[in-house]
Image 1 (tube, rainbow, N blue to C red):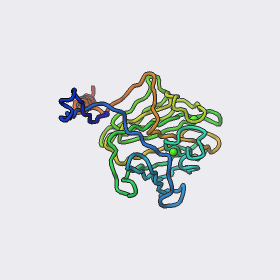
Image 2 (cartoon, protein in one colour):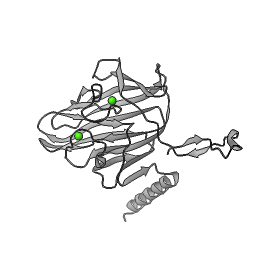
Image 3 (cartoon, helix red, strand yellow):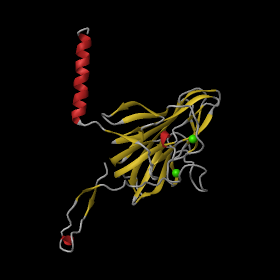
Image 4 (cartoon, protein in one colour):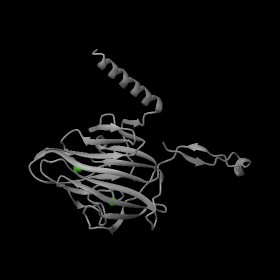
Length: 267
Ligand SMILES: [Ca+2]
Ligand SMILES: [Ca+2]
């Protein structure tokens, strides 16, 4: 939900009265272009990177929390100067080295802070698009995936090739967005919308993201991931899934109770 305030002017009479009401506007664009190592050892668990100029008066701290099943980080953010070969400067684009035939992943936390400090600050409204969720079938069958959490809604194409699994909404929203096909697409292409899941956030100061690769393959692989909070994703036939309302949750829980009672009764 994108809400903002506006001050409509009705002729010259109401100009000073400034009536405020909700009005849809674009989300805040976040820029993950400029960063440096803040603490820890570069590319290792515990490393923290500070991104400056993320938004007006806002910076971001991105930490490497976990490297699982032999995953290592080849590059923390691929699209930095000189110009990128793929994707976007403004996206967070780690390049992971993942082991052969293991489900390997890296876990990051993104925390927004007041510029020049480590004081968390909340962003009122922004989008994060997990771009280029693809795979490969050259040396096996492999599938990229991204776990996101804390969003209000997510959007995929109606004909998406992103599988959404493990979806929960309480106590915090979370889902796994993975490639449904072992097909590789060159580079990182934000127009390849069948391989994008876009999440929308409100009033968020911190979120965790997991990026990984599963499937079978003969050799270790380098894979690039892209979390884009800046560029517009133009879906052809978007399907947006919102957080269930209280009434929907009540319906689901009542349905679950009914099924359990039926099972207990042996029917
Ligand atoms: Ca970047
Ligand atoms: Ca790709």
